[in-house]
Amino acid sequence: MAVNPSIITRDLDKVADLSGNLYESLHVVSQRAKQISLDTKEELNNKLSEFASTVDNLEEVFENKEQIEISKFYERMPKPSTLAMEEFMEGKVHFRHPEPEGDDNL
Picture 1 (cartoon, helix red, strand yellow):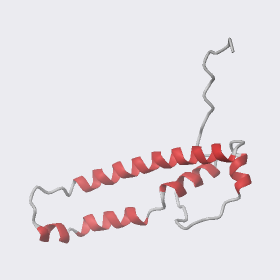
Picture 2 (cartoon, one colour):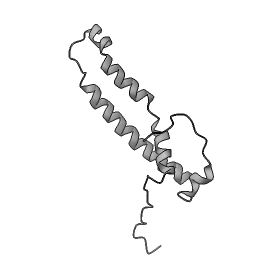
Picture 3 (tube, rainbow, N blue to C red):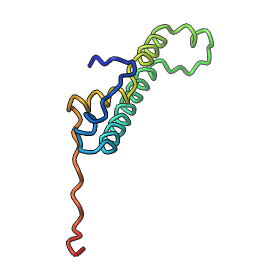
Picture 4 (cartoon, rainbow, N blue to C red):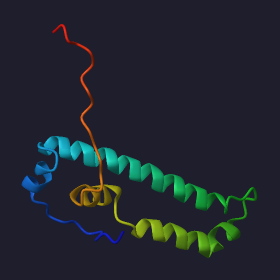
């Protein structure tokens, strides 16, 4: 997904319309951003674990260009909140209201 990494001004009415409530929309976006962040962190850690070394050789640590390129790639990626908002606005995030528990007596 190609997402512009810079800040974009959003029409809050359009954000609110998707769930019926601005705060609910922002909550959904924040939860999705957490998911994206965790997935990205796990992916990065898996890629960098290939470079884990038991030897504390400073020259080797500073000379690993492939590791540096992987890190730079992840640094240039759009922030999870930006990706989550984009997905939300495109209708790609599915959310539901939990069913109320069986409090029929109230």
